[in-house]
Image 1 (tube, helix red, strand yellow):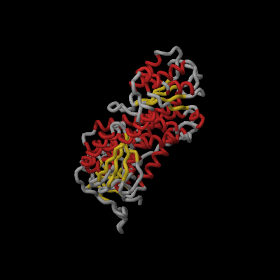
Image 2 (cartoon, rainbow, N blue to C red):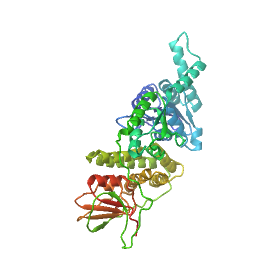
Image 3 (cartoon, rainbow, N blue to C red):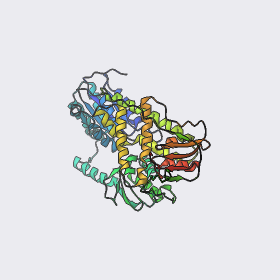
Image 4 (tube, rainbow, N blue to C red):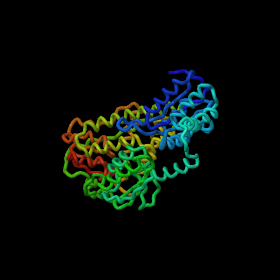
Length: 474
């Protein structure tokens, strides 16, 4: 790593393209004698769709080159500006006062700023040099008519209004936007650079981030609800076209029969029999095999280096993604792979990760505790929804949240060990556990809690294993 003086202004380049930011940095460094602290926050961690910006990356980049000399941030366009503005909210009040945002064009501004910083200029001088870069370029081109700043500003406002597009559409599929349709919508939304929002017009709800799986599911869009999708950015038209096609096609779903959750789940009868709710048809006789998941003990501790703690979380999440993807690749049934594909989106949810980051940076919690607090809060939100079908998605979030906590604790994932055929009895059944079921060993399933609309019941039906949920704890 190149050594540089802490007395020099730090430069942060925020771009949708990592290659572009790296090339600009390389070009600027060729023009300087003294090294300058430069950090790049560009692209996203998606090999198939690498273009985009990440709030957390911007915040980490600023902190990596921060000193009392200050930091100048230069951006390309669109979400790069929004990501930078959001990243500033995570900084301390002292840091915010020393971080400046430049309106200069990325390439010209970065070169001018880096050269000026290498000469030991202060933050005001570096920013002024960067902002003057466009003026220098104009004088070099020497056009007969260069639009005035006022004209440019007016054109920019018109351009922004033009780029902001909206469509209104009615959701017709039987279950509304539940987990799998939400996953499809979020996956498509994340393919575009535009900021995309969803609003449930029928419920007159607030606009939410259409790239957040949790926000989309908990918006509780039901069959017949009218929604508005708003996109702001250069690819807004294409984004809305793709999303509209998805919704108009009922998210690729065919008509299904929905089992209704009864108001009373458990009623012991006079013969001391436990009454539950049928979730998967069939009859099974066998010995009871009890299963109780083990919740790992997670310790909190005062965090001194929040960046290290955040990187620890990123490493754990990457491992969790690999585990889930490995299971997905091994499954032959598309309906079950969709369940775990949704869990991958939970791990990438921007609203969830923003909450975790805030708990680490602002409240100095350990990464594990911050993750647990954020997951528990989101699970509570699911359980408070009116729709029983959406309530049942809480167990999915608990499943992926538990996977991450076990990785933090260094424990192996819970597994079902049947030495002989029997009937599984458990408090509840997560999708991950349900996918381990072997019909030749697990003859039937009984859960004290659970729901007929849970994904574990779908898996039990697919495997042909009889299942009863909600038998209570008697």
